[in-house]
Image 1 (cartoon, rainbow, N blue to C red):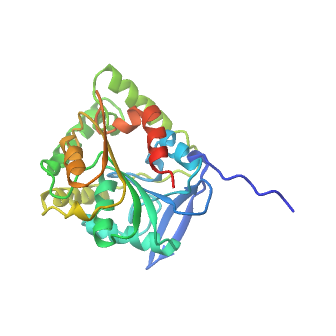
Image 2 (cartoon, one colour):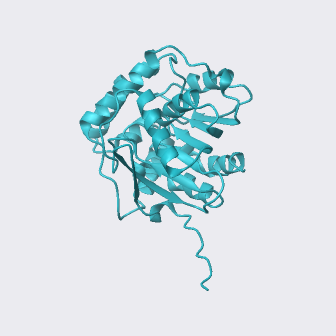
Image 3 (cartoon, rainbow, N blue to C red):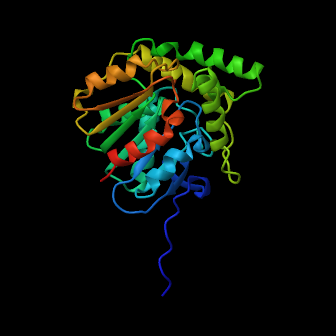
Length: 284
């Protein structure tokens, strides 16, 4: 009998997979040892499977089963990008249910954290532990301004032939510029089986959905009783850092990490500090 093969713990080497449910084909990748409660990753605006930092995913996958997926209409997933984040949460629930899970842990970033909140509001018993990074609550102050910031920084990036995430996620001082370029290089470590970038129409649809989320009535987060870790940089221009403090006040017992001299991508800039902290938080 052959010895059991060790689990793959490298996100750059995780195979692409698909699962079809309700007429939608979801693209996803999984890594780490299977068994127990998985950690499901909820990605940011315009994000595909290729937008997760391996310096954060890989440490978690050392001891946990990790699942990342493309939202409907994005990357390798079929369908049309939904007009609201509530619908995106419904799509995520379909995917998780089709995989056969009734309990998950969540790691979310930016828009992914908004979708995760809507998912928990509808399915309060689904999530055991919650990580919210670079995000804010429904109806959060100035969240609807993300549209203007995103278009402005995308233009700046185009003029300098840079990746927009260097402007959107990081400060434009010397430290931030170095961190941004290092982050983009890490995203390129996977060389085969990469996702197609998001199409412009879908990108605009997601932006409008975030704007609606920001302008709508707040959700009742008092029902969020699971252990929750909130993290951000101190100068988040996309989803203002004050909204991380707002989440912390509204989710009883939550833990808050604010990294200095950093922006929306503070967890990526400080991955050497953040990765072990989130690994400890997600211990079963």
